[in-house]
Length: 136
Image 1 (cartoon, rainbow, N blue to C red):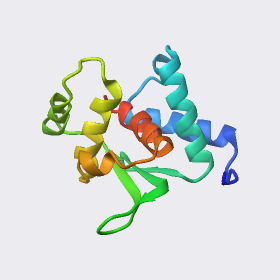
Image 2: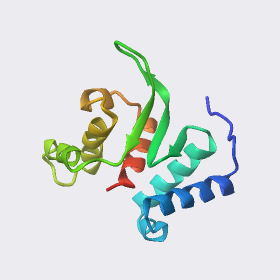
Image 3: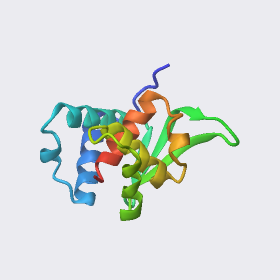
Image 4: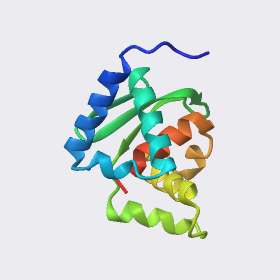
């Protein structure tokens, strides 16, 4: 079930530009490859549909498929990783496993750990990977 957009694409694109400005990112440099363009489109779509919020350098992502377990997780908060949290990437042995490395960092910055991040559905995961890549 696809939710309806609550804001227009032009507004979401402007929101993303403001996020880039706030984070000190040159958005034009991000869109050099297909992977970055796909992440940008996912972020814009999530902003349009109210699945992603940004405030004070923290992204709040509403999950399409909540994670169930001891407690139900409806949202994840994604913020800039610290140096120690970036070391979580070292758990991923393959140098070219960018998604695995992003997942390891997500486990650190969300405080949920990699086992919980592993339970994210692909649409939720790929949006979160796109968001965390803004900090890397």
